[in-house]
Image 1 (cartoon, rainbow, N blue to C red):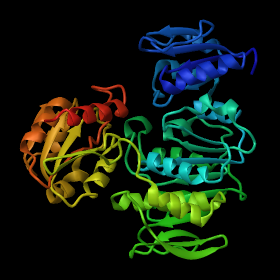
Image 2 (cartoon, helix red, strand yellow; image 1 turned 90 degrees about the horizontal axis):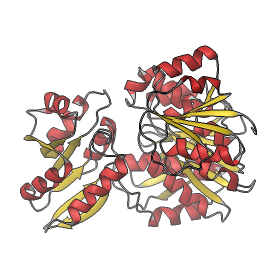
Image 3 (cartoon, one colour; image 1 turned 60 degrees about the vertical axis):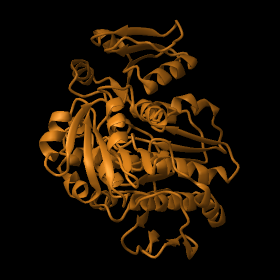
Image 4 (tube, rainbow, N blue to C red; image 1 turned 45 degrees about the vertical axis):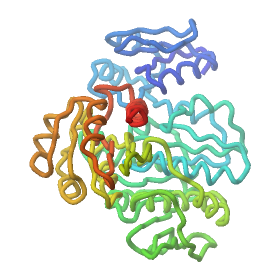
Length: 439
């Protein structure tokens, strides 16, 4: 790629990583963002802020950051010029070397599953890189990989939209429920983007799919890889399933066995995450004994049903990663104790009505924050007491006053964070600081 001119649209985490990566390869880079670019960059990287200029049309290749919409005028011009458009994932994967490239997508559960898969593969004692949407762009580690490496990636529909040759040896689609519809336009288009994860796989590769998810079952019809099913609700002939009595049953390759599930992860959704992770680990050569050891000590990830503190018999739980309605539905179903739920932020266009039944059963109060407050109030008022509190600090203070012994105060916003925070991590850490300051 030496000598090429590459334009990058979007100066977020992956855009900046791609810019630095390309400079190391000797590529001329133009990084463009509508906001002021604050990242520390080499002086050799050209930048522009404000409206994306036609300078991008002089580039040989465009790297499109996650979430950059197709309807932008510059994207339409790029399409007319027939300039190739890649995601950072596509770019970095062309330079990454690995014995196993594991890619995991899905609407919910990606981060927990990716982290757990990384812990499984760590037991093989080979070079391991866990990257992608989980926090470290692949560009930051691609040149450090070797043919003995294992790369475990959390990937999003945004990243998969602009791939060409991206080829995981092991892939997984955990589930597909409404999310990012303001970007993709329809569930069919969203599912199709997720399904691109396996389009370059072959019969020598493995794709792990959720047998309980109708979209996954449809996508399986065009999957070129060997499909390994996982299920929490039914037996599967080829794959991994939960028998409903505390056991995981294996029916894959040379495995014909079962073992008792010992886990610290709460909720039925985490059983599904575990099943998918176990399937990927088995397909990648991790031993059953190692899988069982890791499961017994794994406590989950930050911002996903994370217990922050128990104060006066009240549990405070950080689920800031619940950035869509289905994630919050999963969180509500994970608790038997009465809930005081903090909802709200930047909405994604999906209805909140799917939460009604669980709110009626599990919640005793809703505290609503953020810019999508009017929509949340309109759809959920009248089920349980609901209060508009504006921002997180006020929500935590109010929750601490009304919570009683045995209650759970749950931050599970069902919304993105960008109206008040840079990302869901910042929101979750703010929640934790607020909770730890409570007297």
